[in-house]
Length: 188
Image 1 (tube, rainbow, N blue to C red):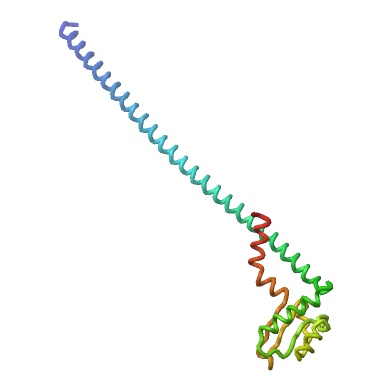
Image 2: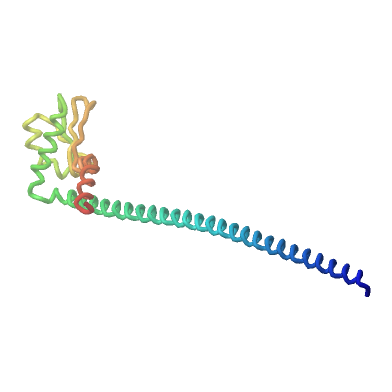
């Protein structure tokens, strides 16, 4: 090989080495850029997944808190209903107590005081003997009404006006305030 061929061969080899080094450098730069993009993409995906996880966790906690609050409210409602049932049971037993005639008389007097011209008193047949003295004293007619075991109904002249005063009715009217007091005592 001639000297010229050797020089050309060296120059070509040098140029090839330069091109190869440039290609390696470009490949390394592209690899680093791709790795950086992949890391950034991976980090963004991790952040998005973490945000989704935290949001799902908050939703689950909120749902759990709501279920717990609902269960507590239902349990408290059941307890209050049980208390109300016990009160009704105690009220139902009052006609057997010695103080019942006086309680019935007071219920009748309250009902009568609400009417300007009372004409009659109605109550359960078992209660009528307790109301006879009051009816005589006031000149009132007594009427049997089996639907009134725990109270009375005062009737105005010609039956146009009436006032019912029963323990059940009073319990219903006062229950919101009473149940709030019971809840305060039970749960603070």
